[in-house]
Image (cartoon, rainbow over all chains, first blue to last red; front, top):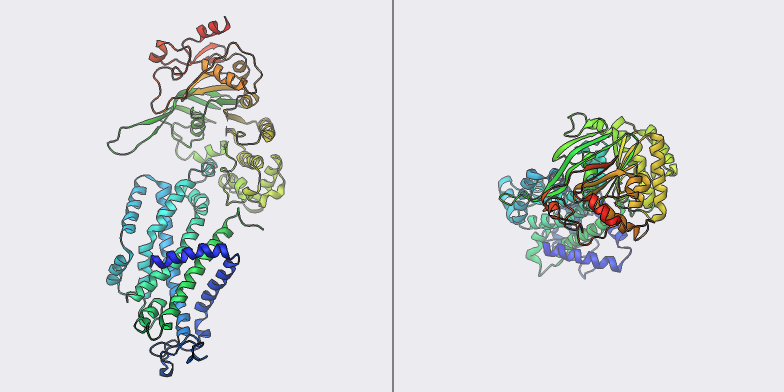
Length: 292
Length: 326
């Protein structure tokens, strides 16, 4: 899991050097994934659940026996892989976005409180953070899914619960540095109540880091979701996710590589483009770098 | 406007259980008054506690001990429910023009924040008032929609000043307001501050380490060393006739560069300022004072008036004076 995301991050760095247009390309890809997810029912060439035995293990169109009908081939049950990837994008993006929204909200709030209030509350929150960061993700997720049962809502909750700690730690550190700035003291001199200083002065100055972590996390969470689904703990059939497709195709890797490579490529491209997009977004959101 | 008696501020160093309780003696037994409409200058090396005094007067740090009244509010401690009113009367300009303005807020919000908080001014009215403030401090009114990073240090300091005067305070703490600026800009900002003082009837606490700047700005000057006030006098008096050996040394150091003053009666000192965690007993300056004697280690010299309006904390100032002028 983390190997794949480290791989993606390494490539992020190299791409930035090699291609000045990378952010444009990445933004385009992100937009493509989002559009595909939103308009899935209208753009898929086939019903993703439709089983066409003639297309069973059909190769992609550029292979000798491939056909235009199944552009990226068919799986063992003859379902169209392209259609399934498009529907998979839908669930992957929904799960990742909600999971990060949940993890981010909880983490940012607790991190802000810990860093800004300090003292015993800080110590308490940070010990809980340490405890969460010390637990292996899969183990924690296993426990939660076993307790809650696998469903889309529960996967979101599980990924929210298992990921908030990183946000809390990041935000706390940033808050500690921001709160010693003069403008925070001067906001008090202006008579601004403390909770408003937290929201108006401190939070906006830590959003850069939150956005960077959230976009990097989007990629990570997509991989986590895929891992969960791959292990059978995540999305359950008949719902479709990229991880589930990988899992289903695993048995056919030697005879039909496209069953695993296609969803794998989808994961790779989504994670990569989200990372580049996140970098670009951070630069854009900083008023010191925005030029217009 | 300001009455300070026996101010004490200690910062605890370690809050760990069982650890030896150590404190930084940032300010120890400091007293002074600032009259309405005057500028009280505070000088001393970095770490001498002058910025801490500023923070105490702004009620950004609670007092460890002593009595403090600022602009008619007692800060020992401030009565609950009166903080807003206090904040209306007391404002500040800090040293770092880059850290004083929230980089994510437009000038409208930066300069207008006190007005919004204190008087609920918003929208078109706020815009108009902020533009008026910009005009007062000599900035173009179109600056209202720009971000702080678009301005130079001197202009940012003008923004900080506009913000501070927006609520018509009675008293302002100016903590090294020009020391981060180019020399060519300093005079402009200092003149602006003096003009505003005259027009708005402001009282200033002017904190700086630059003696020439303090002389230019201040009516009276206090000299601090390692958390204590060592000399307090009218500006003219202090610069003409410094009596404390530390003040003499400061003036000599400045004179070596730019203050045009003569001086057999000055003092050279060496070494470093001792740690405020474990300050020397008695007179804190004794470890670096060429005239130190046994009594200096045993007894803390009180700040006593030696001539009208001129108070110093030194056991042997008369002897030193005699020796230096002999």
